[in-house]
Length: 322
Image (cartoon, rainbow, N blue to C red; front, side):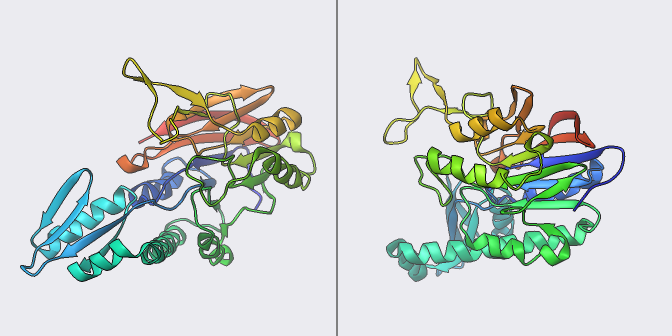
């Protein structure tokens, strides 16, 4: 998994959250930007399941995007499903009886959601290996804090076809070793992969101990470092409402103190982060550049950083979106 040549170009994106439109753009970006390292790091899966309800009169209805949708033909239903998929939502066709079953059975909803996540993830990976030469392009697909653990097994199915599942291992770009973490510090939503700061620091230290020289490495940690331009999110009340003053949303730093601590301690060449969608940008901690592309997955917008490295040196980095 070592990239060779004068300069290696990393195309780094995050937080696709189920949007097939963004996934397709990420795949196309490899050729467009001549990247020889392609990374999608953290929060691959969506958060919403939309029932599309079949009625006795032959119509279909659904509620999403703040509206009630009425569809009168198969082509209209298919177009609506495509719209949902582009926005990162999952969908299931049901009749009125099946809709009531979903309403009354949270476990059933969860099972359907997981099935849809696995189905879409596998379809995405098939598309990836059909469009990208993963033998010559280092192609990294990493879960994040929002992703259920079942997703990891799906990614691993494609390791023998060149897809890099980066957790609990080290891979290299030029002469830089890369370590990766999907965990974040605690959130109000209690997502699947969270650790308190003390445990997160221990976990990161164990990862970093695998490196020959951490100062000549890349930290691919989904959680952004605390108190930077990468971790500003709306301040929330206990009931998860945005705090406003004179109608203006208030922001606060919500990143990881453990991530910041290990960056300050080891000074890697660059930190690649995500998680906070509203806080795309870059900053510096000591000698270490840290970046977060941010995310507008529900709008179908691909955000990324292009990072260029040569040997053990960071050559250039810049943000793109489209």
